[in-house]
Length: 363
Ligand code: 9MR
Image 1 (tube, protein in one colour):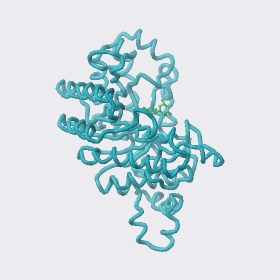
Image 2 (spheres, helix red, strand yellow):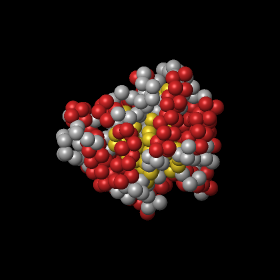
Image 3 (cartoon, protein in one colour):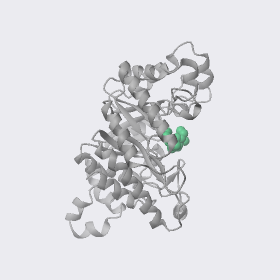
Image 4 (cartoon, helix red, strand yellow):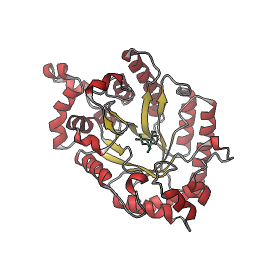
């Protein structure tokens, strides 16, 4: 922990709602240990996505440094932000986040290099007309090269599986696949390994967490993809399981035994695991926030039990630390009451049941 973080610890704890205890008994400091301390005790990381605009919110920045030892940019390492015009790069947001993370002893994750979404408007035509794979390999070399040794783990390819498109291999019909065929995934990982041999390379997706029939299909195709890459010697180190749940909407449930079996297969293939984007949407739930908070925490706990049991998980990142921000904006206090409650801290940075579910998972 950096000296600034240490200095901030008390302030951050107060903000996190432990004021009464701390004033009275030093012992409470131990039992109220941050998520980063709890994760580190298990040799793991706890982190969150963030945007550079959030760092200007000093109260939040203190709590971020206090609670998290890992961070991933929510959008500032996506190609639409990084390369708005061909060859013209803007690294300002990603640099600010990386500097903050390193100043506070946090590891950085990079998200994401090859994806069908969040691309600049010019890219799709460029991919279609591309003579060769340089259209993604050079991009990977530039971006990963810039952060070589400074971003510890990268989502190299994101969401390449989409059985709903009807292909026998379950791959998503996107501009990369149409131009280069399924081999674009292998090539992206090869380029990533060349760009930073020390980085953990992750295939990141959603769709394997749930209990529905379509999730069974998703798991089958994902395992096939990962098995194939292992056989071909493609340099993939970990599977990134996003973990977006919806507590009160159809398809938002999970089945612990299916999840357990899936993670056993990931483990048998020799992959590590990263929970990369956990959140539990409470949309459609009852008016009583306490009831929704309990349900969100329950899903978190039931998801994290098999994850921790798998013995292969390096990091758990939530897709945000506090409910205070929505769609890239700081929400004013008079609107906090109507915000979704899907993250560990509420809008006033108080710990909710979900925070405690994470704390327990690290125990
Ligand atoms: O939360 C992200 C939002 O701010 C972006 O606009 C959007 C498109 O880039 O992506 C959101 O994050 C997604 C992530 O990159 C990939 N998995 C699903 C996430 C939530 O939609």
